[in-house]
Length: 118
Length: 114
Image (tube, rainbow over all chains, first blue to last red; front, side):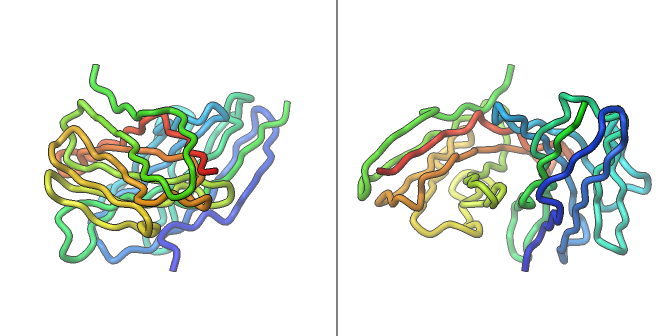
C-alpha cells in the first residue's frame, strides 16, 4: 500500500487565486512528520512547510499553510494568492520510524504538477 | 556554509558496468537517503542510513548498494548498470532526531545507461 498518496497529477489555478494540493498518508508511527517540497523546472528540491504529528496548530509559512486533519490522515497544502512562479511540481513527504529501526524513513508521494495561469 | 553535494552531475555509462554516485554532506547529519526520480513516479527511496555502519533498504533497492563508513558520505553503487536504472538520482540528509528540520537535498545526478 502507498504510504503517501497525491491524487492530483496536475492542476491549474488562476493567478492570485488560492489552491489546495491534496495529500493523504498512512503510518503506524505515532510520532511522524509531514513535509511539502517544491520542485521547479530547474530540478532542485525546495522545502516549503512542516507539520509534526503532535502539533496542535496547522503549520503556516508565508503564503503556504498545511491543512492537517489527523483523524483523516490528510495533510493538504494550501497556497494563497498564487503567483506565476508557483508553477512547479509539489511533493508531499512523510518522516516515520519503522518498528525495530533506529532511524527515520522519509518517503514521498508521486507529486502534483501545478500550473498557474496569468 | 554547510551543504550537500553530489557528483558527478551527469553520467553516461554502458549496460553491465559498475557505477558509483557520490554524496557528501557537511551538516554532520546522521540520516542520509538516496532516491531516484522518474516521470510519473515522484521520488522513490532506494536506501537510507541512520549513521555510520547503518544501512537500510528502501522500496526500490534491487540492483543498488550503499555503505556508510563515515558521517559525511553515502555513496550509491549500481553493481551492474541496467537501462532501467536510467534516472535522476537525489541524495538527501537530515537530523530528524534532534529537531524537526527538513531534509536537505543535493542537486541531483542524471544517469543514463546505454
